[in-house]
Amino acid sequence: MTTDLDSGTNTPLADANPRRVVAVDAVVRNLQLPSGPRRFDVLNPATGDVVAAVPDADPAEALDAVTLAEAAGRDWAARTPRHRADILRRWYDLIVEHAEDIALLITREMGKPLAEARGEVTYGSDFVRWYAEETVRPGGTVRDVPAGGGTLLTRRAPVGLSVLITPWNFPLAMATRKIAPALAAGCPVVIKPAALTPLTTYYAVNLARRAGVPDDLIQIVSTTNASGFSEAVLPDPRVRKVSFTGSTGVGKVLLRLAADNVLRSSMELGGNAPLLVFDDADLERAVDGAYAAKMRNGGQSCIAANRIYVQDGIADAFVEGLTEKMAAALVGDGLADNVALGPLIDGRAVTSMRQLVDNAVGHGATVRTGGHTLAGAGHFFPATVLDHVPATADISSSEIFGPIAAIQRFRTEAEAVRRANATEFGLAGYVFTDNLDRALNVADALETGLVGINQGVPSNAAAPFGGMKQSGLGREGSAEGLDEYQEVRFYNIARRGTH
Ligand code: NAD
Image: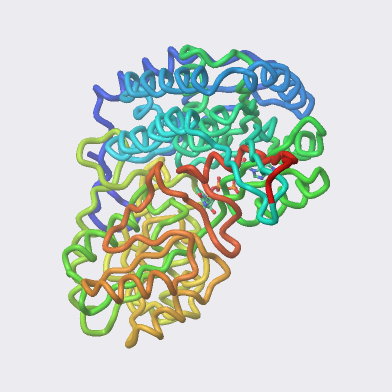
């Protein structure tokens, strides 16, 4: 265990468990990474060390990937749903079989604690199982023309070649949440993983091939030239769909590119989730839920609780409870024992945390725990609680993407809802109350695509995840997630003898 020298506190930084280091080294050695003339390094955010080097594709190579995927896609679309389902199911089984290796790899390239990486493997693999099950469900409908004289038959067809662009924060789940429904629908894919975390995508797609997915059907394009990729690929007439998860700013750039080619577009963008705790909430459940909603993935989640609003009557007890829990979070390498908070993804993220804290304090917020920089080669920042954060502080309007709980207080339900909705984002919201009417009324009033009621981890493969307002377009997961990769067509069959 090393000690934090920089801040003058004794916050411990836990070191990786040596057994796990040996295990993850073996996983990295056995990665079957493609060769390529140019390569870039993937770094371990806990140490800054190089994990592996992957191909750095240029725009021409991205277009080659489109050619290969498109050719493989014709045969795939013609296979039966049952055939596709069986292959997806085998892919799911292989992910489960290799769950520990994948979790180790996620932690190595992204930093999250191993226990959370295991959770991501469960969550990420669930999308593959769900779509293996979903693809054999009937998708069409039969209706009579209301005025008579015909029957309307609706059919579903694969939308076509799909370009998938994923972020670094959930390297497996963000990939499977897109690849599985695309394959289930019969679409070929070109996926560009985040340059910070491409290794998990390579690993998972290798398993998909072992499961029977045709070699060329999923093309991975790892690149440091993200804009070169999208500017080459999205205007290509063979591409029919773009699905993006990432920041709202980049999403808008991609939507503009998609407009010229009229691409079906799914956008899972940034969030600024409000979490509301009412006086009548169960205190323990509210503290645990807020902790989970804030600290999962070190706060680097699009649905992380960004603005925590607490009603006056419960506020002091809540702040005390959350502070105690946050202060106890052991910070360190994601492969350390009992670690609750890994490194942030890079140095810029640490700088951003510092600036948000300083700005909030400058506006009158009080630091209850954390707030200082931690020493070490990795990008660490401690779990931090800020109380009495004013709405004017930067932290109240920006996506924090780190382990800072920013607490504001409120008096009435109407005031809480008004303040919660005072943002251009609308991805997730949270409500803690033991009053069922209030829970549902407030959930209805929140302008967000999903609401956690008395719980901090609402996502599920069976649920239609997605945002309102500038948090996105479309849904991922559930039956709705398959719709995103399908065209609905209709045949109007003329009939004699009907009215
Ligand atoms: P980002 O927008 O910087 O990057 C996301 C992906 O887009 C990466 O693969 C990146 O290389 C790529 N990219 C960047 N510029 C591009 C361009 N011009 N053309 C093509 N690709 C480009 O986001 P990030 O920092 O990786 O992820 C964090 C953001 O993602 C946060 O805003 C978070 O809220 C959001 N997010 C949203 C969801 C959701 O489901 N709504 C889920 C996870 C993360």
